[in-house]
Image: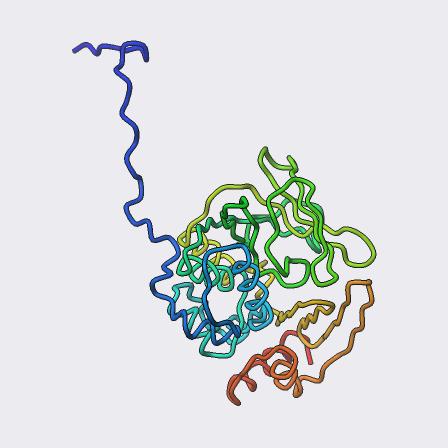
Length: 303
């Protein structure tokens, strides 16, 4: 038996590829209870897919829904389907970490008629200098004015409002400095977001403009829920950032920071953590959940 070898020149041009994915509903905005979400973040009225709406939703979401990893502290899974995100963060007076926060935002923006693309970033803050896996989620939103970075799931150092994708763009949001630059640390087409902490410019995260979908984030999320080196296992982490103030609670240490570099730090008694979560971060836990959190904090801190 002989096989004829064909050179590329002997082949007829291949047809254009058809869609590789038949399900184009990437963000499942149709599953969102939009009315409940808008009530949670304090928005109402006409919200067309414009830059003004994007800014308003971004600011309102950050102001209402804190960053937190309490599901892992409570020993619970972190589902990423839209109904579960709504039940927890919209109806349940809770927050979440980046996958939860930005997938909820993506569903909201999708429902409002925006064009949304997901990216994955390498967190650089508090890093050792070694490359880290891309475990942070962020979004690109395409408008008539161009593409904008949206991210409500980072905590301190992240944007309060969308940032235009423009090399060297620098601005101040609520007193906090931000700058976006093109870099080539790992490969071409990378971007670096930095923040000014009152003392200097600090790297926040880097990312490539490579599209991600919800299924990618589910894999990353499993890593954060199970890997022994996950930053969200073995400690409590809660953050809320807004104009002029950033609150960060790690286990029982509460840090308050301002854009001029001022930082105050205090230790919170374990039995007062539930009160701090409620009063400072707006997180509602029932009595049984508070008891579990207190028990875990004693384990984390060796009390």
